[in-house]
Image (cartoon, rainbow, N blue to C red; front, top):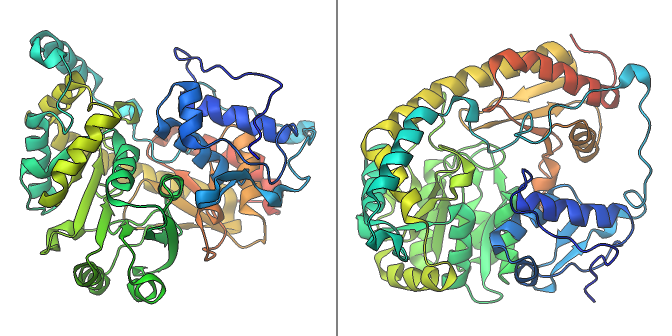
Length: 480
């Protein structure tokens, strides 16, 4: 039976500085920690909660994914989402411990991006003047026709710009007619589930994986089949052995989320061969592909797809900024019409004005220059933060540097619980996430995930010292 906390009715404050998903997350987290929701209690469905709050399903998905990532809830597919039975009495009505005066850590400033937040680009170095000029000009030039309902498949000039960009940067041969503009990657996943999946259809999912993908597909009623990831990416042979007749495979071949490995060429070919032989489709989440610091960016899986089995998903959130809520899908031609109809019924498409601004940013060359500038900046910030972590923590940790991406994996030798370490860091104001929570069926080890792209070089050492004050006692010893 679904139980919803009744002691206080949550009202979303839409002009507040706290995002809506965060407000929903805090509501349920408080209800769980105060005992209003007990282990095993079922939470409302994403659809119902979105209706109750008059907000998008994607917003609720993000909130539930955060709760799942921190171990408060567990998604059970068609059975819904429940409060984690593993919590027992650990997180229920637990009084906050009082820190010793010598251990006290002043939390970073609350209200904006938090230190080490994952998936957040460098907002401090975004070209605001250029963007502001484009916003003003595009607003002036917006026609009366464009002020009516947008094209549900996307603004044609933006679709043309995306197709041109993918041809030169990712080696993808597609026409603008195959490009559909979405409400970010989450919107793309929702559309894919709605158009392509029936309840209990099997879907290969990398293990470990991006938690929002697991949440969205599980909420759609798919039967998720976790497939282990190793140093060469998803183990395609394991997928064939476990669920040869799966309908979809969701993969991050350029930079696996969260381990950062790339899918090897033999496995790419094996994956495409499986899809062609069985009629399955592959969703390529080109996660962080622009940001590779060793060698050239890897070609997209879609670039070697000769039988039109790959749906390529990209987003502007990590290249520009997340609140744009714009992404894109490159679709096989035979499903474009079905996706257009689904998007029309779902959201009527994205804002034409926003799409015009992004189009201008791309065709005037600002986008390519921004990507190159951020790649150079992130390479520096990655190096500086890694060095600062090593200097502060010493031999207690090892920084797992991958060739690309926007986060670091910090591993440690002591048998400490990374979920508890992350919780301590989060209580101190840091957006650190535990690696182990990304696993579904196969353990991927313990570690902490730290975003580095929004950490200025001048702040790295100070933030690492604050982090050490928070989690150092859990790791034991002293760093450098």
